[in-house]
Image 1 (tube, rainbow, N blue to C red):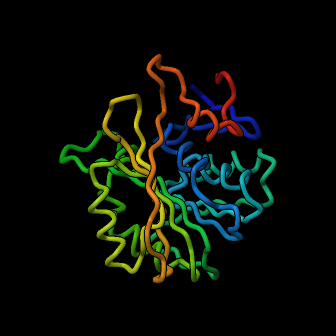
Image 2: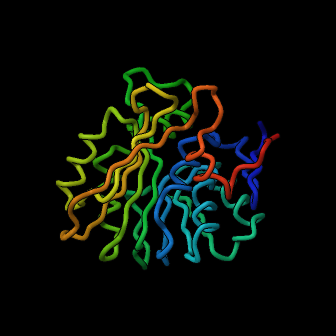
Image 3: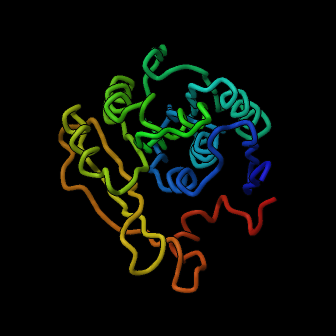
Length: 236
C-alpha cells in the first residue's frame, strides 16, 4: 500500500522503514491530548501520530525523527494536510534534541523488538529495535523535555509492562492510565497503552481493556468508536 487514506489527511509511507499500523492509530486516537498546547511525537516516522494529534487538538505538534528519509516524508505528509501550520517535523536524535521550549504532552510509539538477530535492513532495524533508542533513553529524555504536569503516552508490548513502569518510576513518572489491548475474545493482552505524568501527587491509576475484534473478526464497537474520526471504510 503506497499510501494510507484517513478522513482528514493521507499518509504516504513508501519511503519509511515502518509503515502505518494499528499501534500508531491506537495511540493517536487513545491519548488524552485535549488540553495540550505543545505536543511532542518522539519517533514520528511517517507523521501519522503527529497528524492525528493535530486533528484532535488545537496544539502545535512537533514530530521528532532520527531517520532523514522518514523525516522528509513526514514533512511532506504534514505540509499536504489541513494541519500544516500547526505541525513541525525535526530530523534529529532524541539524545541531542534540546529545543528552546518544553512540552505539556509527549507521545511515542517506540521501537520494541530487542532480539539478538536484527533485520538486514538497517533503517528498519533502527525503527523496530531498542538498540538505538532504549526504553531508559526514551524515558530519561522525555522527562527532560516535560513541563510541569505533562502527560506521557506510549504503546508497548504487554510483556514489558512492569519493566517500563519501573523505569518510569525511577525517573519520577507516575502511571495515570493503563489500557490493555486484546486482539480478539479470550486472547491475552498483546499491547498496552499507558499514560504517565511527572506530577508526583498523581495516584490511583485507572485500568481498562480494549478489544479490537469481535468473535466474527470484525472491528469491535469500542475500537470502531475510538477510531471513527480517522478510518475510512477502505484504503488504497
